[in-house]
Image (cartoon, rainbow, N blue to C red; front, top):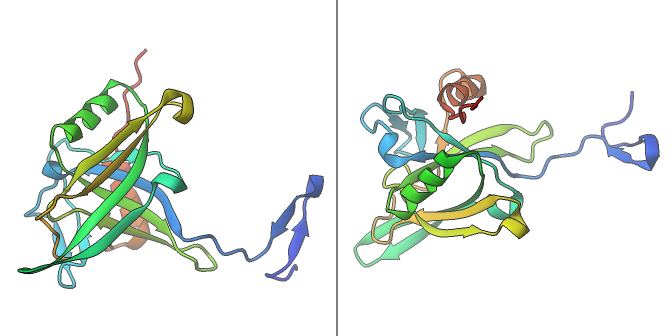
Length: 200
């Protein structure tokens, strides 16, 4: 049996690094219309830093964002003001065009709708453990940037959203941890994820 720190040569001169630790980062991302979340039914613990139950309103969906490392950054920063402190969330993601509904959702953001983002992260553990995080749950984030270049980005729209100035959130990015662990979250995502209808 090969040692976990070994290098294994594969066909064609490629090398497989055994025991490789995956880089930390966002592997998948979804955005949610802030108004589609049932705020009363959604449950938080640990002084509001952890979401244990995330409930959407009837017929609402979460929308997958097809990102890459350059536009998948999710961050928060503490904003210190005269009358209190709060967190500003900033999220960048790219959306692969999946039909006219995609354009409508982006236009909703331009017109002032707010979004929450859900991300799946890979940490630096040996097995690449997953964790899920939510940003913007308290006040939602508004669009700050919308870039599209068909020649450079092959139909990908690059979006940026951020907490509205003066509406800082009380906590940083929240952990999403349901009873049942990762399997329960994966089931929740597959149940609530929007799928573009197939037009015959």
